[in-house]
Every structure is written in C-alpha cells, then in structure tokens.
Amino acid sequence: MSTLKAGVIGYPIHHSKSPIIHGHWIEEYDLTGTYETIEIAPENLKEDIQKLVDQGFHGFNATIPHKENIMALCDEVDETAKAIGAVNTILIKDRKLFGSNTDVFGFIQNIKQEVPHFDFKNKRAVVLGAGGAARAIVYAFKQEDVSEIIITNRTREKAESLIELAPDQVRIIDWELREYALKGSDLLVNTTSLGMEGQLALELDLTQLPTHALVNDIVYTPLMTDLLSDAKAQGNDIVTGIGMLLHQARPAFEKWTGILPDVDDALIKKVLS
Image (cartoon, rainbow, N blue to C red; front, side):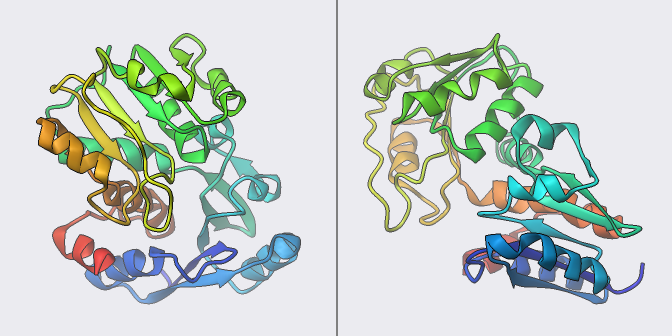
C-alpha cells in the first residue's frame, strides 16, 4: 500500500493511547506511515473531517465526543454501528467515508484470548452501566447467543434504552438491587467509570456471584481494579480492560492496511508503561 496516513479524532485527545497501538503495528509490519492525534472541536467536525479527506488520509478513529455525530457524515455505516448508534472507525475510499464500530469485536476477542474455554452461549450475564460501551457489549452478547442479559445502572431510564438491542434477552434491575442480580450469573462486566483512577469507587459485594463466573472490568487505569481483585480473591476467572482497547484497534488497522495485526506482550507493555 502507499504510505499510511491515519489518526484518531476527539476533544480532548491528548490522553489517547491509539498512536502507541497503531505506531507499534506500523513498525512491526514494516510499513511506512503515520498515526496521529487530531483534536477537533464538536462545532468544527464537518469542516475538519473534510480537511482530512483533502489531505489524503486513509481513515481515522473517532472517540469522545464524536462517536455518535460522525455517523451523519458517513456515506455508509455498517450494521453493527447502526445497531449500537456509534461509529469509532472510518475508512476513507474514493473521498467517501465508510463508518464501522469495532468495540463488539474488541470486547469478544479480549475474552476469547484471555479465557479460551469460556462459552457465551446460553449464559446469564450482568452488565453494570448503560453508556456507549454497554451498548456495544449488549449487542456482542446478542451475537454470541447469551440467553439472559441483566443491566443495572444508576439511572434506570438510561438502562431501559438498551432493551431495543436485544428485547428477548435484556432485563433491567434497579441499581440498589445490583448484588441480588449476581446470584446464578455466569458473567459480570463493569462498563461504568466507577473504580477508575480519579473516579468514585465501585461498591459491590460479590458474595452472591458464583465462583465459576467470569468477571471483566473494561476500566484499565488501574489495570487491576478493586472489582477484579475481589473477584480473583474469591476464585473467579478475571479479564482486565486493556485487551478490549487493543483488540478493537485490530479491525481498524486491517481496514486501512489489509493486515489484521496481533495483540502481543510487547504491545501490552508499551500501552501500560
């Protein structure tokens, strides 16, 4: 391919680890090109995206606050992005924007790589939170034939908006009853910012959670959250959040270069350092 020209848009964007990830793969696969952070204010989205097209970008990733608004600027959007209501990856081809969402892939592949024996089919899952990541994860569960998806969020109305993603599987439980929801569950996923560095703690007693259940926290700062530490101490298998970030980047890189890269220890070490 010609020299890769890609990046990530957001506002603010200085915190993004995407340049580390894609820079690692550009080097690993001996490609020439750049991947940069591009700060775009919401009010300038349309005109600044046009500038990227004019500058010959192959594509870009979109993060907060552009994942929803970028959809209206895309010429085509894939089914996953339509269902979730957010685009995080854009391919530019013939001056047209092709939008997709790779969070579903990232979430599933992280668990499959870390816990290969785990089978989603006919399982009972509990999801804490109802934001964009939760939407992607509920859609992933539907694709993987999870039989029951219990969503609990501090704002019940927001949780109820996720029912449309999998109406036959989703059930809403009030936040105050979140520990009750753990009983008999096979999988617990925290999609909230609770427990993240600088945020409030996630208060959750895992006593009701069966020891065979898998626990995943998509927070990766810190990598080992209190939720994961408590689950590990109880004997549960755990999956950290860094893998979802890394795996969701793989299909984006493939769209721009034709190469589906691997997630290896060297990349994980770079991103966490």
